[in-house]
Image (cartoon, rainbow, N blue to C red; front, side, top):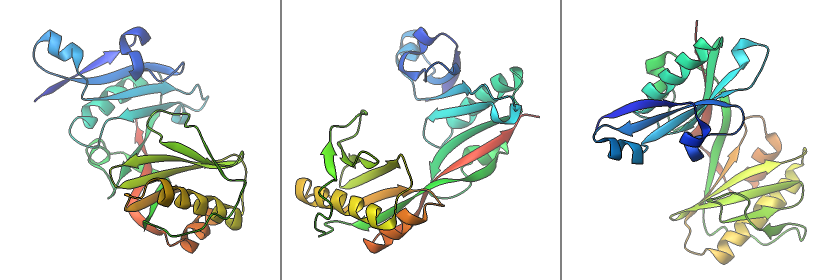
Amino acid sequence: MANFVECITDPDAAGPLWCGDRTVAVFAARPEGSAAEAAGRVEGSVALLDLGADDPALRFVAVLDCPEGEILVPLLRGAADEARKAGGATLRWITEEDVSPGKAAVELGALESGEVYRWWRRDLPAGVPVRDAAVRQLPPEEEGVAFRIGTDDAWYDVELDDDRARLVHDREDESTADALTALTSAALHALDTDHPGLRAAEVNAAPDDDGLHAALRRLGFAATNSRAVEYTLSLA
């Protein structure tokens, strides 16, 4: 089914597609057809955020809620036009992909700015013991997260997708490979114990996060081709 792109500048009309106070517009792809059908369905969206930077090349970013494919290109074109009108010099966005560059980057002529993180993977069950009593399970703070496990300074938000667990890593301060090994080991132990049907675990790691890389290698993880990449589109 064909889609048309709608530009929404009213936060109330955008509803959950609006990404906070810095959002200036949302571009939504809706199916063509009756007005009732188009108003009730969104196939994908891109929110345009104004970060307020003095440098016009760092001012605008796009937040994608749309898979890589045909719909993403017109959505990003709409966001780019709006950013250009507002004095932006570039438009940046982050997307996950298994190969580079993605279709939208090729068609729009965007350049890769850098890798944000890469997914590392290992089979389950891991068969690892709990290593650190300070690591504990916590209630999730975001929708779609099964549970959080960690300490006050470092943690994983664990998402379950069929027979795969995705461990989204975050921490407030620098940490050692030993501490990150203990944290990851505890997360794997929780998956083995509480979710025995899982077949694989994946962890996201930034390209310069040497401590986490070391911890993941110790526990049998290997880097995959799946990664998140930032692209920059010149608006000149």
